[in-house]
Length: 205
Image 1: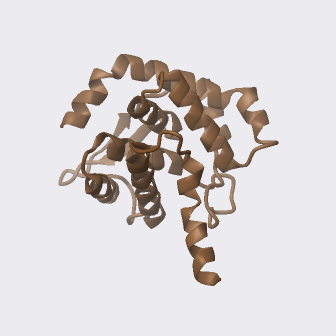
Image 2: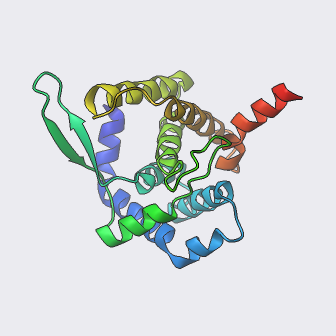
């Protein structure tokens, strides 16, 4: 409940921040960065730009990134019992910026990223959303619990057949990032997003 109140209380500034980040991601400048930076480095750049725009307010920067990185304008939710499907609108920019932004979102985040045009474009919203929850929470396990709840919610309410365990893994990494950010504000997302491949390398040596 407190998280919901805080989000709606920030609605005006949140919209401004989401619009700014959406315009930044959709810009030719950001697109051209991809010729010299990989997608993890682009994610770091995006995080740093959000922190700078939010005047080093890290929880606000994480929340703005969550909405800016969601590749959907509306989320289809199926209401239990009556089975009706409603389209729930999310905070987003106008259509032209929104779709261009989606095409520029970093999509190659993991060693097992699907080899298609979409890749992992939806994972940054999971990552930064879970980071926001952990950063705002004084109890680390709360982030992990809510991350699990989000997946169960998606399974129960959205038109989706089963829980996406790659989303769950991303939620967990986001939790780690948010918790560690409390102690080290110089930490960048790439350091945490690299953990899965580092774990594999460790066991293979």
